Image 1 (cartoon, rainbow, N blue to C red):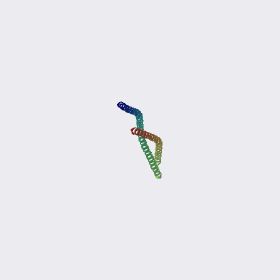
Image 2 (tube, rainbow, N blue to C red):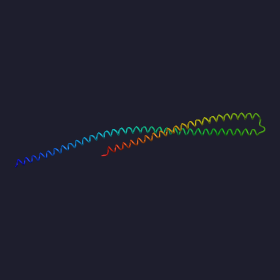
Image 3 (tube, one colour):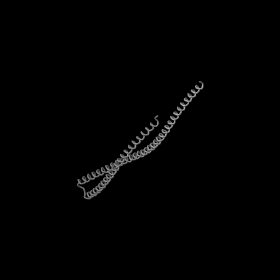
Image 4 (cartoon, rainbow, N blue to C red):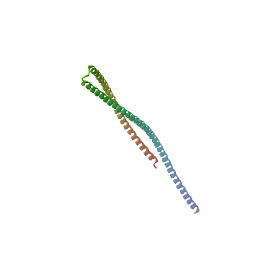
Length: 199
């Protein structure tokens, strides 16, 4: 009876040890699987970090490009303002020159009419007045030529201003496109960060 008792006890102990060994084996397998999963996740996180780094570099490059475009746009705005001031100056000069010419011609004509009405006028004075009139007309022609030259310059400056406005419009379009791309990149990076940081 004692021998049988010890045999049963030994068998029971062996079964218990076997169960423990099997449990430990299962636990070890689960640990191995968890380690493998963690290593895989670590690799994926490393790849995602590289991608985020690449996107950040691209975003920095786009921001630098955007800054250059904005500086160029500011320069164009300044040039446009300078051209507008120059056009205003030329227009004012042109109008002033025309007004001076008209006033002098009116004064000259009034003087001639007054002299013609005087009976005592002499032929010498008439000849002198004619010479003055010819000189005045020559000056008037010169002023008209100057006015035409000013008109040509104004047209040229307006053409340059139109070209600058068109260039400004294109630059604004490029800047908007770059800002949209930057916003998309920032959104992607934010989404990736949330994906990485979320449990």
